[in-house]
Image (cartoon, rainbow, N blue to C red; front, side, top):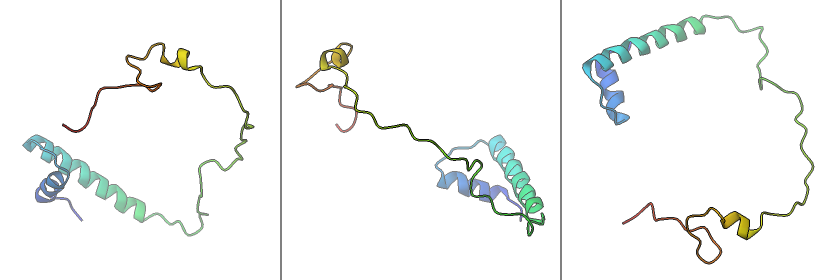
Length: 96
């Protein structure tokens, strides 16, 4: 399989990307290199290789749950730009 210019342009459109002609050529070459590499990987005989579930399967010790006091409100709000009814108040970032 070979990736052609039209396929790259279609992928760019679906991805909502604007590519220059140079970028299209570069992407076409990169994707063709990737397809060639995948073909090489497909030829590797893996029938005697045991599947790997994880890179590192050693046990992960968990820390003990401890009840610790929280940060006092006065200290938490000390550097806040604005506080409203004991909550951080921030400018609206979505909507109109």
